[in-house]
Amino acid sequence: MDIYTIIFLALAVFIFLRLRSVLGQRTGNERPPFDRNALQGAQDKNVVTMPGKVIDQAPLAPTAEPTPPADRWKGLAEPGTPLAQGLDAIVDKDSTFDPRHFISGARGAYEMIVLAFANGDRRALRDLLSSEVYESFDAAIKEREKNEQKTETRFVSIDKAELVGAELRDRTAQLTVRFVSQMISATRDKAGNIVDGSADTVADITDIWTFARDTSSRDPNWKLVGTGSAN
Image 1 (tube, rainbow, N blue to C red):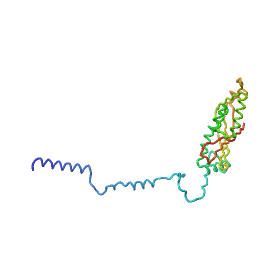
Image 2: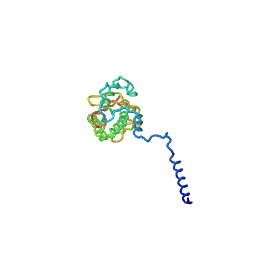
Image 3: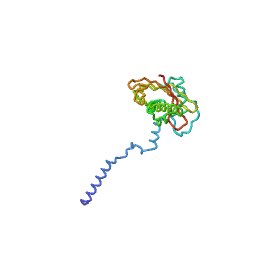
Image 4: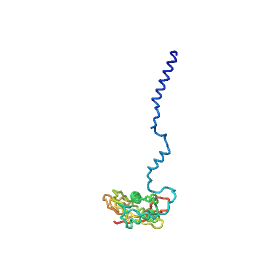
């Protein structure tokens, strides 16, 4: 056997031993091949079904109507009161209704309407008021314009906005809100003299406004349909 044959044999043995050490040997304790279906099944068992409806889900067999929890309107209305019953009726007709979200929007609408009225901004008012309320606001603005008067109003704060009434009339939801605010308001004549209110005094104002919305409409906006004041 010549020297070259010995060298090739030695290299072959060396390469075999290296491959054996890297790849390892079957011992009978190896893990089974990866099974994607088995893994998916294990994950499915850990899925927690969230409450609520799925869009276009086929209806289940009819069951008794669930009883609303006693604390459903916690912080908004006491259980069994007309207010709570009215909220129940509205949410039963419109499952997307959220009274807390409504109150937040009502605060913003209240400030917008008061300032738009003071500034005589009819375009803003038309989008926020029912036709009947708009007509009364427009009449007051026209009277102010006729007398060449201007109103200056500034909010200091809106201290409270709370639901005091809820009602469903056919398809129309009505919500009444009591607003407690502080504002400065003064009306000046053509010469700039104050004829009503005060430019310096902060007044405590309590307004009771009613908003309405057709629950069958795709329009999510509420409109002011009634105003009142406790001052």
